[in-house]
Every structure is written in C-alpha cells, then in structure tokens.
Image (cartoon, rainbow, N blue to C red; front, side, top):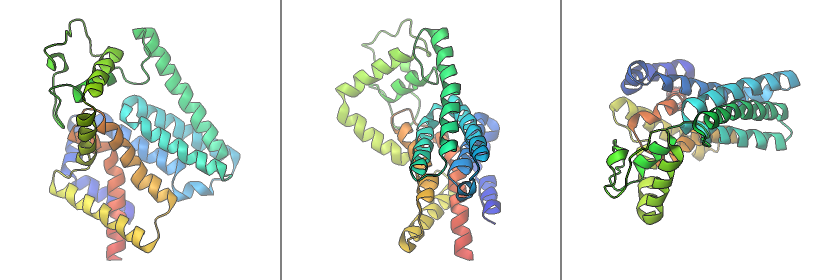
Amino acid sequence: HVAGLAASFLSLASVYVFNYTSYHQYELFVGTCLVLVCYLTISRSSHNVKSTRLQITYGVIAGVLMSLAVLSAAKTALVAVVIAAWLIICALRGEKRYMLAAYLVVGMIICGLWVQRNLHCFDEFIPVTTNGGVVYYIAHNHKSQLTGYVDPWFADPDINYEGLEAHDSASWYALGNAYITAHPVETARDALIKFFLFFKPRFADQSMVILLVIFVIWRRLRDGTMIAEDGVWWIGIPVSIALIHSMYHLEPRYILPVWPFLALFAAQAFARTVK
C-alpha cells in the first residue's frame, strides 16, 4: 500500500515528472540509485542479511550505485558519508561488517579511478565533477543571489577572468573562498536561508507531500516510534543534500533526487492516517 501510494504521489508531482522527463534525466538516475542504496544498507530488511556472501554482495552493489550517483551528481557525496557512518555504527554493534568493507572498498576504487582520470586530463586534483568550482563561485560573489543564475565571468568587475575555463576548479574555488573570507556573516546567513529554501514547496502537490512528511515526523516523535534507521533514511539523506546545496548555487530542481524519499515518507503518513 505504501509503495503504491508513493508511486501515485510521484506520478502526480508535476515539477518532478516534468523535470525528469524533459530536462534533467540524470536526476532520475541519481534518485533511483539513492533509494536502492538505502534499501540495501539502511532498511529494516537489510538487518536480516546475516551470511557473509550476501553482505558482500549487498555492499558491492551499494558501493557501485553510490559511486555512480556521486559521479553523476557531486551533491550526493555527503550522502555516501552518511551511509558509511551508519554502516560503521552497525559494524561496531557486530552487524554488517562485511557489507561495510565491500561498500568502502568498491566506492574508493571507482571514485579513485575517476580522480586519477581527472588528474591525468587536467593536471589538477578534482575529486568528482570538473564544474564544482564554478558552481561554488556562482554562489559566492558580489552579484550572487539565493536562487537564480549569475554569470561567473561577469560577477566582479575588479577581477580579470580572462583565460578561466569552467573546468578550472581550483581557481574558481579560490575566488569563492576569497569572497567568503571577506564576507563571513553574509555567507553564513545566505547558507542558512538556502538550507530552508531547499525544502520550499513551489506547487500545491509539493505542499501536500511536505505537510504529510511533517505530520509523520511529529507522530513518530510523539509516539516514540522513531528509530535510528528512520532518522538516517528519512532525515539524514535529505538534510545531507540540503547542507551541500546551502554552500553552492541553489536551483529548485536540485531537490529532485530527494523527492522519492519524501514521497515514500508522505505515503507512509497517509496510509497510517487513513488506516
């Protein structure tokens, strides 16, 4: 029932469907990877995986999917850390040790190969995407806005941008950091505002889902039924992506990979309410 309701919410989410099918298809891939990774590593059913072979299999698949998500959208890098932290906690309790090892090894191999590729192509250490620096600078310059695009090559008349390319990540990060150093209060204020703007409902269908999410969190906290897995799955993943975007350029479409999680949570709330 919950899965069916979640699919219905997603199919009725106008901005979600429009963006996925029209302009930003890679976000669908990223969102799917994140849901599958969470199912393999965090869901309650994953606790029933006791055999070493199955744990390694789950860990390898999760590591591959998480690496592909990070390489497709750097904003999911903090999600990879959240998943790893959860598996470490489980390992300290004597659970999922082989899953943790497989997840970390596979992730480091895949992402390490990509870093080596960037180093070979650009003679520069670029952890994931080559345009991370320019997106960072778009959010930290004299003309930057909370939302909306600012041409980085015309952000500051006192800076000579001649010769700078979009893939010159280190140079753009240096410019952004210089602005942050000069304007720490404004940067902190804007980051806090963008964190909340990340979850801002922009259409009626989004508002319904957000309200249901708030409702089920309140009910679980009130009833004492919120468990650690719920905190990681329903809160840790969306918050980690929002934290990354609070330090970068923010657009409404950036919430798309989080939308499946919100839809599942909202469906769970709706099913419990009408039960």
